[in-house]
Image (cartoon, rainbow, N blue to C red; front, top):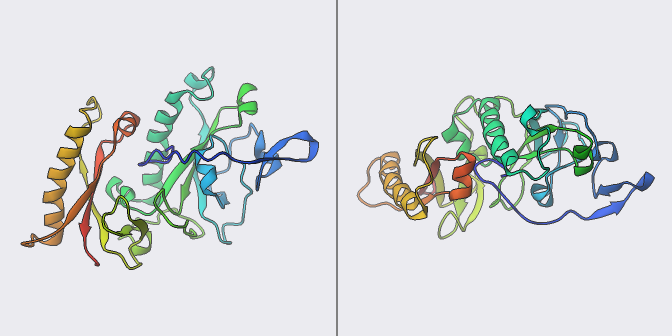
Length: 266
C-alpha cells in the first residue's frame, strides 16, 4: 500500500516548488533529505499528508517525537541486492515491502496480525528519490501512520509506538465505522461513537495459493465472517455483520485475510 493491508493509491501528485540551489523540493520537505542516499533513521517522527501516500519517495521534515506527529519510522535499511539494478518502479519492490514492512510492524507494535489488520493504524513505505536511485541509492523506509484510507483525519501518535499493542489494545487505536456499512462509512477509533466494529480477521487462503477469483474470495469471506461474528457476539438469534475482502493485487502482495465487522455500538 503501498501501506500494508491496504495497498493504497490516492493518486494525488505532490506540488513541486523551487528551492535554493535549483533543487526541486516538495512543499513541506527537508531539502537535505530530498535526494539523500543515507538510510533513514528508525524512530524518526513526521507529519505526513494524504498526498504523500501516493509518492514513492518522501522527504518530510522531522519533528520531535514529543511534539504532535502522525507518522513514525519503525523500520528502515538497505534494499536486498537483487534490486541493485531494478527499475525504479519495479512491481517487485512493492511486493517485497508488503511482506517486510508488514512483518516489521506486527513485531514493532507487539501485536498479532489480526490486531494489526483491525487497528486504525496503517503503514506506508518510501524509497530514495529517482535521482538518488539513478546514482545507486537503495534504501527503504517504513512509516506507521495514525489512520488509513477511510479516516477523516490522521491521529497524533504517542512519543513511540513501540509495543503499543503488546497488551489489550486501547479502543483509541482500533477501527470502527459509522454509516450504513463499514466499507463506505467513515473510519474512526472505537473510542468514538460508532455502529460498526472490526472484530475478527479470517484466513481465505494459504501463502502458496493462486488467486481463486473475486467471487470465491467474497463467498469465503461472507461464510467465514458470518460464523466468526456470531461467535464474537455470543451467538445471538439476530445480528448484522459485514466483511472487507481484498482483490488480486493485494493477494499477489501477500494478503490472505479478510476483516469481519459486527454491527454494534459496543
